[in-house]
Image 1 (cartoon, rainbow, N blue to C red):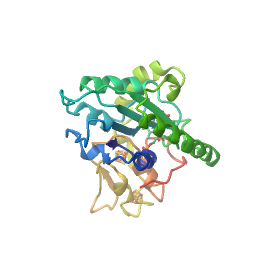
Image 2: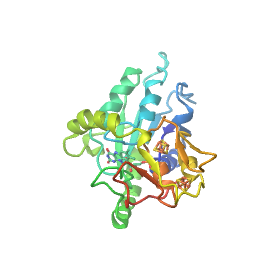
Image 3: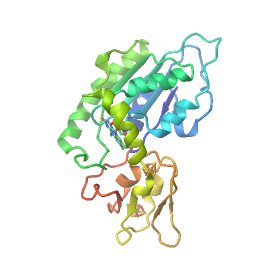
Image 4: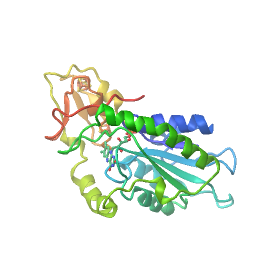
Length: 258
Ligand SMILES: Cc1cc2nc3c(=O)[nH]c(=O)nc-3n(C[C@H](O)[C@H](O)[C@H](O)COP(=O)(O)O)c2cc1C
Ligand code: SF4
Ligand code: SF4
């Protein structure tokens, strides 16, 4: 069983590929908060696939893990793995996840990170990848996925080589991440450029949390305050009408993978 969360679709595509190759069921975390996983056998693994946001778990993934019911006491230890998608590096996301799962009585057996298209654009210096970098990442993914599938099939533990913590992982995950979550994730910073907005509703449709309505009178998006900062709404707009704060004007967009 694989639970996934995805904003712009990188993790969704990877989760689908994993599920197909492993013959596993795929379930969205957003629809399974607080429900106990129903395993077909005691040998079935528990997989988690999601993106790294600000060197940690997306808020919605944090909520999913925090509400995960404890494993049944009578069942032997289950293989639990996570595949984290990122644009570059994960900091200490693996450790944050291990601790969060541990608080719910689950032990993380293996964790892998995979570099995919970068989707973060809201601060100066951050933009989507060039087509050449995207192609390089895609070319690497197939071999990486094959390796991960083999490791999961053989129920292997992961090693330090399976993740890309990057430079200063502690600083990123333990200092910058809380500041980022506190000051840079509120959906009140989203603005819609009304003259170019056509009211098409693609931003609302792209939001994995149903956090956007199209206002009936202005025909523009209205954010409802329970955002996980995935930026799907920003990337989905065909007219680049959505901006976040001051720094997304002129930045690139990625195509949403559904
Ligand atoms: C808010 C936000 C924060 C991000 N933070 C990181 C990060 O800390 N490290 C990184 O390598 N990539 C980061 N990224 C890039 C995503 O992890 C990466 O593009 C991921 O594959 C997106 O997956 P999704 O399409 O399933 O949402 C971030 C993206 C967003 C939207
Ligand atoms: S409002 Fe936008 S950034 Fe927030 S969860 Fe929805 S799509 Fe993602
Ligand atoms: S996707 Fe863009 S044009 Fe369409 S409703 Fe949303 S902001 Fe307006």
